[in-house]
Image (cartoon, rainbow, N blue to C red; front, side, top):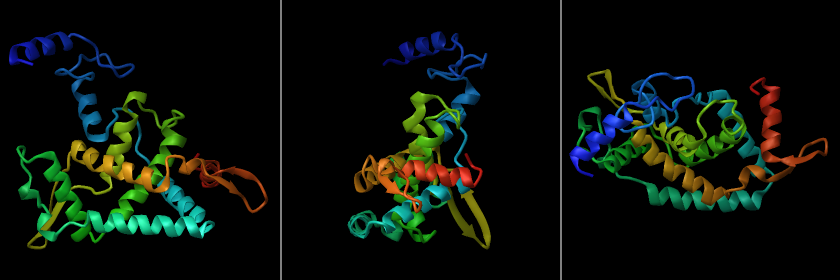
Length: 238
């Protein structure tokens, strides 16, 4: 698209209202949102959805562990798959990026790779932790986002999930002369990483993981998701 045509499209688009319900501001640029909602959507993946709480995600992660403990064969297979993935995704320390390394012309894939290297070497974390977090987020989305409890705009569902999955890795940080220095990682960088985390969570655990059948101690049959909902209600989080 030529610069002139793009400018004409922008002029026309900016006469339209923001797509966020109840917002009476005009759109910004060629996107669907006003400037403020555009910035939030870019950072979070959705301009309206609330973020998952740490306590909510902890219950989903606990449910994953409890379920795998009931099926040693499945747990062994998943552990082997995650181990193989871990070896494939291991990056050398030289790939780490500091805040000073980040600039506008640096490709998104380079930023994502650097942030992952930081996660592995400077944070001492694993790729498996990111995959398991993505799986917990997938369950959270089924309970809170899909039901409307978390707000959000449905067409942004995948962008929100991927952004939150990648956001686990945080920002670019380094300590210089005892003083912490940081540079914010963009939503686009988080989405680039989160897309892979969600993909691996789906392929290793299965797309229907949260629909897996379970039986409670008192003999009730239900899905793993329904079991997790009971735990959330007991914790007064649902």
